[in-house]
Image (cartoon, rainbow, N blue to C red):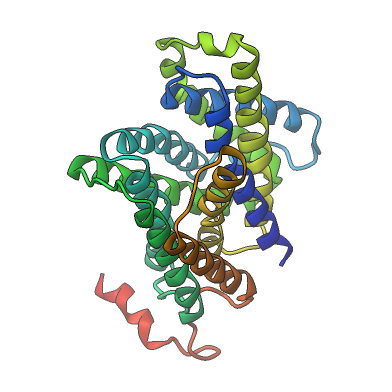
Length: 304
């Protein structure tokens, strides 16, 4: 349960991103803000790692999973913001965040040759359904074909990050795997910062917002998330991250003054139910169907 609570805490920190940007400086590009988050977060994580334990060394991070994890994180930023720009915040967020647990389940199932457990499905289906109800109940949803595709690619990119980060987290110190991953991702996105206007960070509100996004919602949140991944399977972790849009909605109501319809509140309740079921599930996320005998769902690996 400790790992699941850590992942939920990370989701709550991520959920503050929208409110922080709403209260921060105007005129800042979301893509630039996302890139600055990675750069600042990567710097903080390197400092943390420099003062961390030294016994594990760094060689274990020289592996394909580190590069794949960084590419997944770096790809998520432009695909997400581009998708949101074309198809709107509601649909873009729904497709990107809502599809990530499904993609994680598919990737893990393809790797292991085993379908996810029914307990995971019983948690994920209501969580994603509740998110869908919440987003669509707000109205103003406009679906753009290319925007929807970009948002789905963002969800796939994040799923790739989660799966790779999970493998790294179970191999060594969490702070080092996150630090190296985010440094590589920051290098990939550095051209965005170098070619765009970042003057908004010189204002007090802009500086405060950037610091919060970089230190709290990036460095601290992903440290906590990776620590949770060390003791939690990745597909359950991906479902628990759906606590992010719930947090974002509640903060928008309580802080920004937005309103949520009755149907929207029902969607929030359904998502929370799914999160509770995911947190309660202590079993392995894949079907085993007995002790040593492979279950009937294992045969799909041979089919592929």
